[in-house]
Amino acid sequence: MNPPLGFSRQLDAPANRVWRLITDTRTWPVWGPSIRGVDCQHRYIRAGSNGRILTALGVWMPFVVGIVEPESYWDWRVAGVAATGHRVEPLGPNRCRLTFTVPGWAFGYGLVCRLALMRIDRLLMQVRKQHVS
Image (tube, rainbow, N blue to C red; front, side):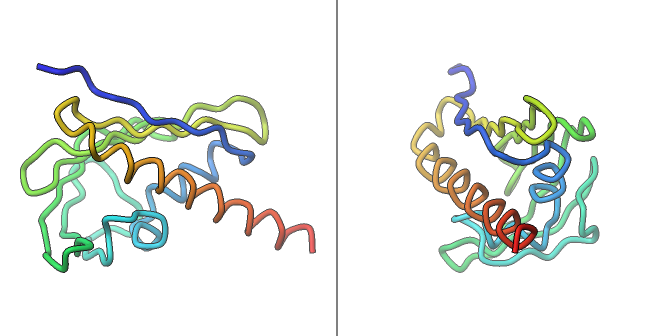
């Protein structure tokens, strides 16, 4: 079995802000390239949250959130298959590292993870500009 692969980016934002963004199901279609819609019982995920996502291919797929370590890590299964893990590590008061992990067999999904990391960075930059203006 292949070990999980990690795709990371350092972000100029507090870890709790990034955590809130990646656990808010309403924002998933904004930063997640493979997600077009979300139907979930919880706006902010927790262990056991479940629902369905509308994929970029136009197909609804069920999901269940597995492990949640508050402010730090969460993972999920999509259509019964282990999907991405999401880890936030504080690097200072206004800086953190966000890492997406994927099963080794899903190495091609790394491109989607990198695009998601860039989108999240852009979203956070927009928020910073709004606070400065």
